[in-house]
Amino acid sequence: MSRIALLSEAVASQVAAGEVVERPASVVKELVENSIDAGARKIEVLIRRGGISSIRVVDDGSGMDRDDALLCLERHATSKIRTGHDLAAIHTLGFRGEALPSIASVSRFRLATREHGALAGTEVLVNGGKIESVKDSGDAPGTQIEARQLFYNLPARRKFLRTENTESSHVEHQLHLQAIGHPEIGFVFVNDERVVYQLPPATHLRERIRDLCGPALTAELLEVPEFATDSISIRGLIGRAGVSRSSRVQQLVFLNGRAVENSTLNFALREGYHTALMKGQHPVTFLFIDMDPAAVDVNVHPAKREVRFRNGTEIREAVVEATRRALETDRASWSRTFQASEPASKPLPDTTLPLLPAQEQIALRRAWSALPLQPTTSPSPTSERPAPLPAPAPIESPAAIEPPPSAIHPSQDFRILGVLGKLYVLMENASGLVLVDQHAAHERILFEEMLKRMEQQGVPTQRLLLPLTLQVSPRDADWLTRHLDVLTRAGIGLEPFGENTFKIDSLPTFLRGSEPAPLIREIIDDLRETSTQTSKLRLGEDMIAKTVCRHAVKANDYLREPELVRLIQDLLACDLPYCCPHGRPTMIQMSFGELEKKFGRKA
Ligand code: ADP
Ligand code: MG
Image (spheres, rainbow, N blue to C red):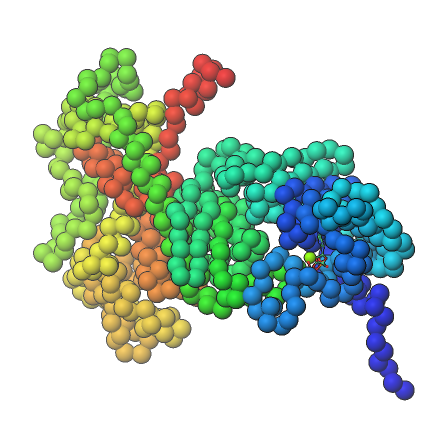
């Protein structure tokens, strides 16, 4: 007996609906995308009870004539593509011709649509996929679609819906994506009769983000400088270094107007931020990529959220570069902040701090000089100092007792007030108070210094008096062999020395004093994680960042006045001065405005 039968159209639609319509938010997504494709300037979305009870989307787009109003409910009916050839270069958000029949098959559905200039519109009522009535309607030009009692005929599906609150927050997120992706369109969102927002059409993305996400976040965003290659152009706003989230919810990337998720893009952003991002954190981005639709396949997933690139390397490099350039623009603004401060020669009014009585200041300064910045084992003849900081003077040196900090700076863009908790340098600039984490600052400086040296002549090394041998597991030996060149450029002198054994004969100068064998083991462990996803050059950078961190100046090392000044100057000369190689901030500005607020001088 034959057992195969063709499914009825209604059942086939329900099956398809399973892929396209997962929850109210997916209905909202499909309907809003249709409105955008129809050229709407204003879209209203009204939901009740998380969208489970009803979803209504109203637009002022092109509308449809009666034939189309009926045809659009058929499966695979679309005005957006005609041939398989068109599929290779999709210009619209929709193209599958599945959304409307799918939604109509799992809800009580009403479509009212009218073309501009038409005498009358059309209203179609559908119940669980069955057309109940077709008649004239007097609605305004554009299209209104309402889906009530989602999954009323599919109890199994309905059970998978979450609470009304959860569903409505999914709807809200979906709309958030659409509203950011299309700032030129006005959006209204009404949830259970409450107007959640009413966004006027925006002329600039920044305006739309401010309306949706608030001014605080908007102030932390950097404009991506116009970036274009032959085939890709990138624009948008991204969070400055140090701005991050523990999930990817605010890492938004729009490809040809469509919010997409793609691992190549995720890696590229991570790589672009590189050291400006803390481990486990994700950047905040509103990135818009435009590229030839033929170079990307959007027909990967029914919900069209995922995409596949024909040339992943090209897009990845473009995103890395655009991100880096944006982050670097921030450096200029930091320097401006610092240069805007008082000139060097201006004597301090007596009312400005000292934080401590003069006597204690001197004592403190003595204490700063007591501990050197770097370990001070006498340098061997072959060693060269990589650190840009001056060597510490002996305690008794006359330089140990300095005149007050304010009087001596060679460059007076900032003024050092003192050191708090042996770690935080307190400074004053034109805008107010600046706190610098001296440990993080030193990490950043060493890190950039090392990178430059790696690119140029190599990192200065110090030979070990006695070369060491290191025995490792076969897997680690394999890893080391593959990365010998990067390690050597980073100043770690390593060569194979028999089976699974290596000889270490030199280390970077700044690691002087570290135990070589455990250090190499740590490095292998650290890097195995990163090496699967990053390019070789990046791998070197990561390694340096991590090792530098461990061996940079310790939090409670005392720095003497000139060393502090030098530290700050070197920091400001860095490419990314405002965060350490792990993405933690190096400086925090507390403006006079904020201080006034805290002291209740101003609301
Ligand atoms: P797709 O968007 O993939 O083409 P849909 O099932 O979502 O498939 O829509 C089918 C067709 O109905 C669209 O191609 C479009 O021509 C028409 N349509 C749907 N929504 C609207 C709308 N809001 N305004 C005008 N036309 C619409
Ligand atoms: Mg569609």
